[in-house]
Length: 626
Ligand SMILES: [Fe+2]
Ligand SMILES: [Fe+2]
Image 1 (cartoon, protein in one colour):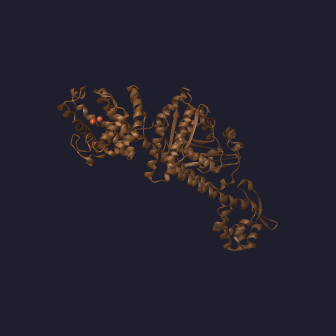
Image 2 (cartoon, rainbow, N blue to C red):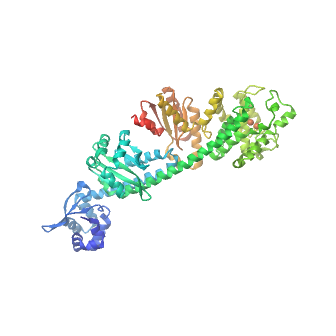
Image 3 (cartoon, rainbow, N blue to C red):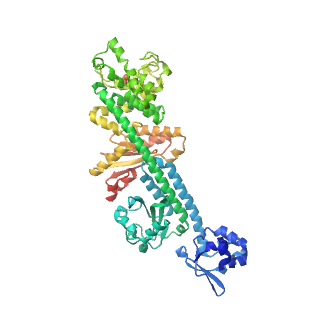
């Protein structure tokens, strides 16, 4: 059996093979060349068999794809070429199988371009996904849909097992260990592993044994299965299997495309896993640093019960102000640490002054005024915190130069210090003191307006008046709960956006599921087109949307930002109508202020429980109960 392509392409065969010889003698080398160029790709998989002269005609058989198996007569092909002397006619006038093959080749090209687009899109957006598995899931689904597969599974070979990694359209029965064990015993898969080449079967019931039996319960009729190896460093890392309910002849022409896709896919996954690993470790490190800072601050604040939580709240206010000043996340993070540490120097102030329940006399006040310097000197000892030393040192300076300890004026006071000053004052005024009760928000606003440009930066004051009341209300709620609750709550919040941490929502979902408590959960997503905007516009949109979410979705709705464009929410004890009206006003406000439509979906657990993994991944026990 010879490959027909070789007859036209291979110099030797071209002259030796009877078919090549016939064509050559009839039409000359130029026709052969043109044929090669035009249909070469399409007939790469054509094979000739039983080529024989029969009553003066050369006959050959096409063996792939199966449905085109038949006997075709060579003279017909030659005759058509000869008659019109045009290659166009080779395609339009040739017998049905070749015409179909041509259309399949075209289809192959379109699919190949689309597959490339999927990979491209994924490799660009991959860092937004919360886990490599979720992105694999997404790629697999897109790829399966593109090819018209009814189900798909990706298995990776790790620790001696063909573990399930991602799937589309399959249930947990099929994905369980039972099938893992079978893989090595099936010749179809043994071939895939040995040859590290794609395998196709149009007879899955026979070729895949027990695997096919279960697969046919999901994909019916089970007509075709294609498995593509995932290869890394010349070793097989896993494979992707696609199941079809009708034969897809085009796949025979796509083996290279599919194999390349799989390898590229494996590469992206690895890149993503590595990236997420880096992110996670740096997050862990950051959290550890923050834990140390927080416990230090807590230790000093316990000395004076009136200032408990002060630094943490100043950090929350300062972060909110900095967000509205459009600072970078990195700078905001530094500011929140500066806020946590701004009063740490009070450890150096004697109890008699710090805890005095009456207004201070001049000498006591002079000593008290040393605390910004004390704080700055403590912070200066930490190599990584050098940038924030001036913010801490100057947090009691006034715009008009009448502050302490150095009497700096206006823009000489670093911006970070000016933000801290407003945040600090806001919390001081809204908290009870030994000598006075907390002021009302109206009183605070009046004092801030009064001091704008004199004591505080006027622009920051106007931001405080506009935005800090919402934060204050939340903080008050926290303040009213027990101290322990307050601390845990802080660890659940994302300091950068004031929303909950995604991990926290995730834990909550898990515990609600374990305790069989019904809840509503869902996702709100901005359109992908946001990615095409310049980064400043992108940032602005995200900030605006975050603000709207904080204003419109009230407790007990818990919201976290999951990826760059996606927010998720969880409502443990819910009032369907209330939630719907909140979501409605949210989408209206988002549209009004950003011109963007949020894609909002919500699900009720347990009724729609299998949708849970879409928003919160890694819910293996949920999948199993499906
Ligand atoms: Fe202070
Ligand atoms: Fe303070």
